[in-house]
Every structure is written in C-alpha cells, then in structure tokens.
Amino acid sequence: MNSPDKYSGLQPYRIALDMEKEGKQLFLEAARTTKSNLARQTFEFLAKEEDRHLEQIEKFYRAMEESDGKDVPHVDDSDADARLEGFNQRLESMREDFVSTASDIEAYQVALRFENGAEEFYQEMLDRSEDPRVKRFYRWLIDEENMHSRLINSCLKFVEDPAEWFRKRKA
Image (cartoon, rainbow, N blue to C red; front, side, top):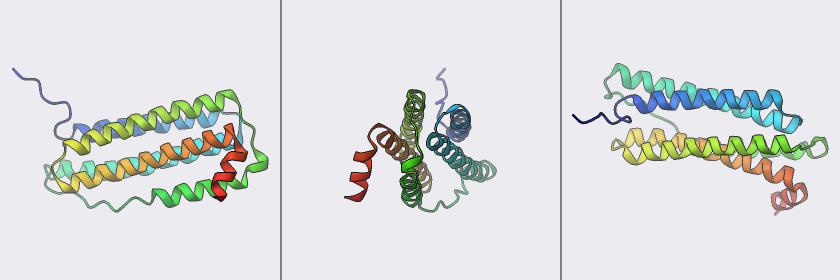
C-alpha cells in the first residue's frame, strides 16, 4: 500500500499555518530577550508580519477547504519591497541609538535560518502546484519570506558594519 503524499490536499496549508505560528513565537521570544532596541523592534516587526501571513493563509485554507479546492481566492501582489524600504528608513533613524550584542547577532542568524527554511518549503509547494492561482499564492508567500530574509540580512550588516551599511544605502 502506498503511503499518501504528506503534501497532498490541504496539508501544505496546515504546515504553512504551523510554520508561521512557530515563526511568530520565535520572533516574540527574540524580541523579549534581545538587548538592543534595534533587535527588539526588528523582531516585533517580524512577529506582526507573521500575523499578516497567518491571516492570508487561513483565508486561503478556509476557501480551499469549503470548496474542495475549487474556489481559489485571489492573492494580490506582495508589497514586501515597500515595507522593507520603510523598515530600512527606520533603521537609518536609529543610527545613534543602537548597541549590538553577540546574542542579538545569534538571534538574527537563527531567524534567518527559519525564514530561509520557510521560503524553501513554499518554493517546493510552488514547484509541485499546477493551478496558476495556487502558484500565485505560493509566490506571494515566497516574496514575503524573501523580504524577511533581506530585512534580517540588512540588520546583520547594520550591526556588523554600520558605516558600510550607510555607505551602501547612499549609493
């Protein structure tokens, strides 16, 4: 007897919900334990981002569940780049107000691994999908997770070498 594909039906959406909830908890814990204002604000921002993802995934999941996969909701394009730019502008304003610790850098690195793992999962689901509407949903999630990775990388570069970060921002 063949075992069912663990990614069939609604299972990927349940996995996505679990991943986003786990991410939110990871970010809230990091915000609670981090030492710098910059890291705290970063992780609070990311936790709020996970709430946005949870809302979108739940909406998508409910529609798919109630229609047996026939009613695939429309997903707008991600505005992740605009949110990242807004975050980086706030980061610039914190130039004089940040202190970095090794534990903050480690928290960023853990968060980056988490985001990269989520992005890989969504890419796998996009590659497996045949319905262009479902592909659009996974593309939205990938764009969102990619923005989070870029945001975390930006923070890492900022705390590791602020002068270089500002030089590249002005270029």
